[in-house]
Length: 138
View 1 (tube, rainbow, N blue to C red):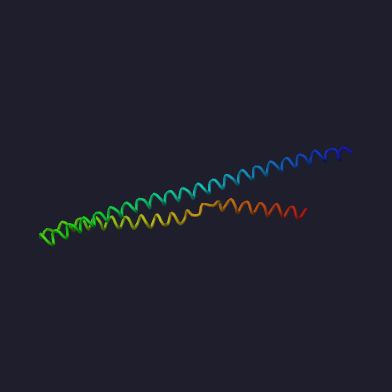
View 2 (cartoon, rainbow, N blue to C red):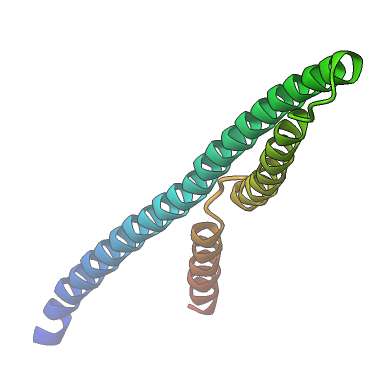
């Protein structure tokens, strides 16, 4: 008779323990999802900043190229001095930096999208499948 009285208490403890573990599991999955989203958003922001830098390099390079072209026309039409080559060298250097920054930005943006918590979703699926398999076995 004493064993039968202990069964409801053991059942209640088991249910409480399962509930606590399920709550802990859900909290851990939410933390994992937050961490994944934070990582992906950081990559997106980094890519956007590098893309902005690339755009600035290209705009400045265009400015120098146009200024150099103006000096080229001025010297070809009116004089022999070759100052414009300095402008073209600077514009070429800025274009190289712009291409490099654009490549890095594209790579960072490609790695950061879409910001979905795939690891958390995979873990949740594994847990669901495991719990479903145990329920079917009982």
